[in-house]
Figure 1 (tube, rainbow, N blue to C red):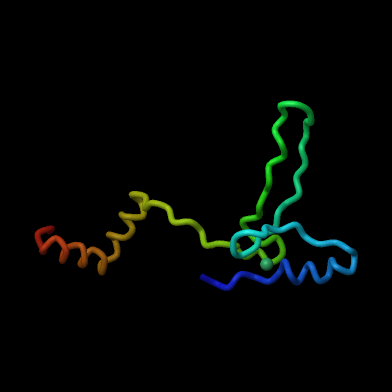
Figure 2: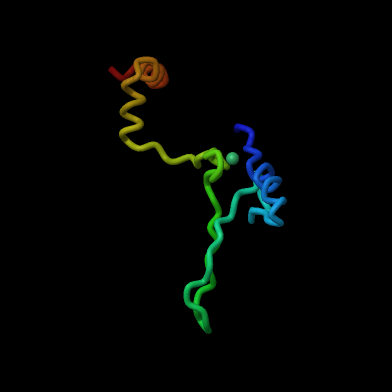
Length: 99
Ligand SMILES: [Zn+2]
């Protein structure tokens, strides 16, 4: 995993001159910027505003956490088998029975 960026700390240093700081997550590593949201309709039974936590750093564009793994699609598997070294390894695993 790559080292997370230091943008939140750097931006907060600049904002400190304006008595301001970013809102960011306190739990989890790395800390992530929280996008400010507000409740549209207020009153009894109305849903509270949802939190929006950035996936990518809004300052440098780095992804905060590695992209989650996803299952291979049949297109991925076909592409893998088109690779001669992979096809040879699969043949070996099958005891050379596959033609
Ligand atoms: Zn950053």
